[in-house]
Image 1 (cartoon, helix red, strand yellow):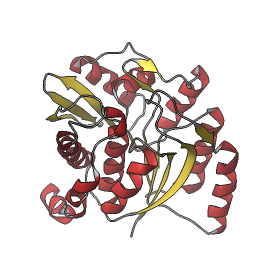
Image 2: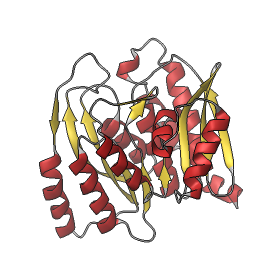
Image 3: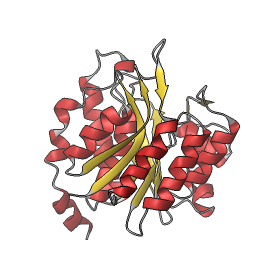
Image 4: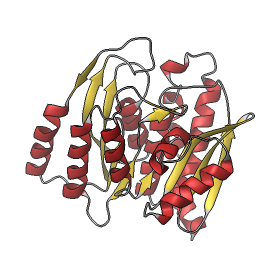
Length: 277
């Protein structure tokens, strides 16, 4: 089985971060090796939460992994607490990213046009630099604007222009999540040769953790040999199905993804590979 290191927080409630990545990537037939950045009572969109940062432990954990001779087919990064954690992740990528290792960065830093409260200008700059090391980044529309250093926009032409700017500056592949229009929510895949818009049903509004689910499926799909576009299609369909089933749930509680994991386990990855050939 292929191995994926996932660097993210663990939240007790909210069905996000490691709580989503571990079952999602495991259901896709890959091992998950979590490196927690923090432990939270619940994700940060609730009215209150408690958090224990693991900044001082991450380096010690990584040293133990080195003693084990660990190697990874993919690395996925998510939520960070402070500047030092970004430096640790940057060094982790240098140490563990081999030529065939897939590096996916989910720049969890903003939403609805605003940076998260914990983010400083220095953290923004360091996340931008980390994005240029990645094989794929999965920003939402707000994060894309900050990384591209452009005004926040939900306009598809602006999204395309921002992606093209980043591609021309050296970022390899971009999947922009959560572009809302009418009763559809679209994800835009942009690489050096083309852009693809993948639309899904918009159901129930905001849900915690969908970005984490999306990045996890992108990572798992790439590990199973799918293209970025095929991985994004799988992620879009999966999240749309989960969201439709979660209409009555609180958005902060996340989507009911557990009962749809069979969609990932039973997906015919080999058939898709044959079709792409």
